[in-house]
Length: 234
Image (cartoon, rainbow, N blue to C red; front, top):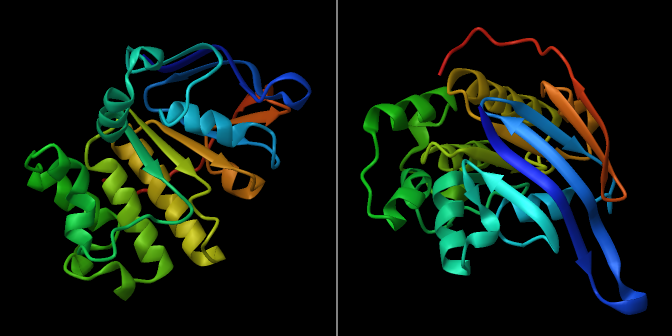
């Protein structure tokens, strides 16, 4: 089942002699449950693509459809709601609210819609991510790796159609980076969670089952590979 489709996506900034083409005809299809890494050097266009998929920017040309919704039809308010409900976001910097506990940070997307969490699902997430004993702590009382786990839990709480991870290990040491990638892989397999990972680190990209390389705003390669799986289940 196709969960994401980009067709002829172009993004142009500026005008005249100052015009810059950040994306130049991106065609991309991702099925539900895929774990895809998008790699490219600085300026390749991968971050621009992430912003468009995350509904914080719109393409100059072309269409983006996520879970049956054409993003071009959304108003800014509708886009914000869609992003909260359908697109989980994990960044290099965790963007946790410092005055809220771990529990409240995780449940924030649901609280904004005045929805009650599925307690069984919530417990599975925090148990698997290893933060069940830190739910009443504040972000400042956590390590960097623990804060990123909280950010991942928050991104999963709404069961999003698509999880976008933007350099999620960029602020972590090697040990924590490996653990975070293991957690993303586990959520992909056990929850059938579709994940799009944006990274410049080829070693991190190797955790995905499909690697797309972007260069000068274009997709220059799209390769599938087998990934070793963990025995644990979410």
